[in-house]
Image (tube, rainbow, N blue to C red; front, side, top):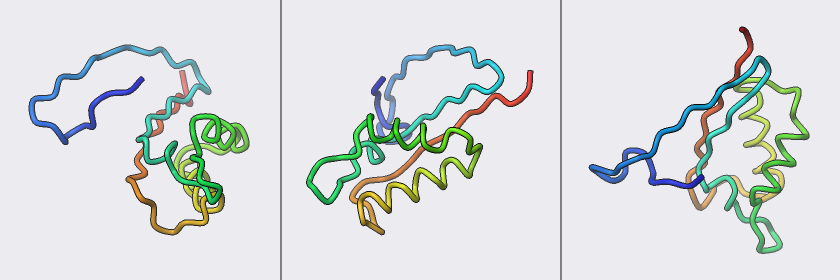
Amino acid sequence: AFGMPIGLVEGAEFSTFEVHLDVGDRLLLYSDGITECPLPDGTMIDEDGLSRMLSQHHATKGVSLLDAVFAELKAQSGLEDFPDDLSCALIERTAP
């Protein structure tokens, strides 16, 4: 789901939701700078590209997963500096 940037618009209202994570589940929250990362052919990484990255690194956990995603973005885009912010938060459930 898409929403307002956090902390950018004073008085912005946000919807809330609850999610149940079982052991081994992960929740990745990310900015559009990741999925809109430009590729050399003029397309973007898009949700499918991010999904492929996450599948490729499914055994990687925690900060190492985020590092792997950023390394993939650099490798696929050929960029060192990105045109938009690359922000994400990873929540993993590792114990009952």
